[in-house]
Length: 93
Image (cartoon, rainbow, N blue to C red; front, side, top):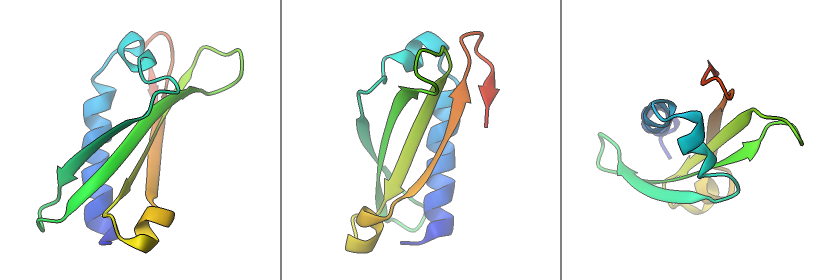
C-alpha cells in the first residue's frame, strides 16, 4: 500500500466527516461504516470508520478511521487516524 496516497485519501474522508455535527457523528457510535474511495493512482481503498465515547461516561466522541488497499499486510495493519469532537462541536485533532 502506498502510505502517502492512502494517508491523503484518509485525510480527505476525515475532513468530510469534520463537516458533520456532533449529533450527526453520534449516529456512528459503535456502528462501523465501510466505504470505498479511489486514490489518484487508481487504487481502490477501503475505509472504515466509527465513533466511540472518548471516556466512559464522558460526552466527547472520538471518530476513528482506518484505510487499506485490500492487500494482506495492509488489511492486517491498516493506516489509522481520527479526531475528537466535543458536544459544543469543537474539533480536536
